[in-house]
View 1: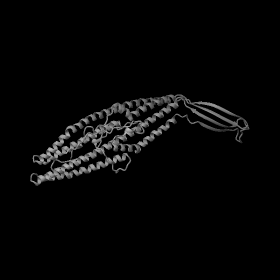
View 2: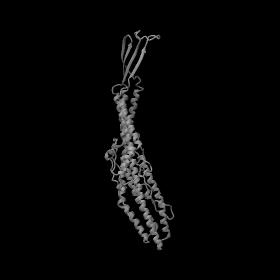
View 3: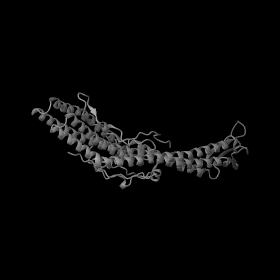
View 4: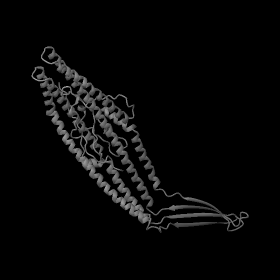
Length: 460
């Protein structure tokens, strides 16, 4: 009896980084996954908060280009303290003055450009939240499919153990086998129940993760219509495509532009600002007086103030230029690592499909047939079963980590590749009287599972 498992695809279909609403072809053909993505992108509070931050910065752009608020001054000038002399003395009057500050030409435009680039920075943060949220949903969905695939594999394992127990009982009843073989088969079936409960807990945890991401009750059931074999072959991204999508790289570049504008503004701050004043002074029965004036700020402390500000922004610009190079280099490294892992995992996947799984199943069936005919021992049959389960489980893990690498490529993450985690499968213990063992090939780390280290995120 063979478990047919085809290749596992990646779930890599991403919206453009600048899109507020994903286009129609953003969502995958798998309806369950498409619904999960829609709900998560519509309901998750982190994404709503990031959207609000973008809108908040957008509101600051027009403010930055407006003239400073004018000043209205009201006054009274009077001769003596005995009584009001307005209309009696020519030097007594009311005053109404209006003052409008005027920055040096070009300052307002630069301030508006700096504010506009702040929108780009907050939008890069929003894109990172969106990409991270989408990757979490896709990883969680792949993990759920992996655990349910493991459950089906465990059901096959239980069926084989049931057949082995029936065979051991038949051989014992006709005097060709030992009572120890029968007891051993019963023991292994009992031990398998531990792994069943473990996988059930893993499945509930995977469902809870997806429900949290879509803001549902954690215990709400989640039916899946697909298996790992039903998912399409994933696409890959070139280093140039990853760089074009990376919010960290976009943020670093926007920061460089913003710093350049701040440097220009700091240089303009060495120029004086102006203020125009116009006033009217009614004098009662006398003709009113009026005044017009202009004031100019004097940047006399430029050596210790404006010049220092220019130097500050120049150092900042140089540092941000280095940040762009650093982010680009790390991003290319991660892309290269993941591309190499994808290539290796595909070869391992094909090796499993084209040879190892067939050979492992044939070996197990042969061992079981030899035990049935009395030419092999029962522990040898258990060892073969253990190998078959381990190979099947390792194949699933290989497919899952291939999926993880594709998701990380599309996420454009600078940190290590998060694995797609499943449960563990129980396997028949070979040592007589030994504790239940876990199939080493079912839990061993396979190529593609992240072992590297590095910064999980870059400051924006």
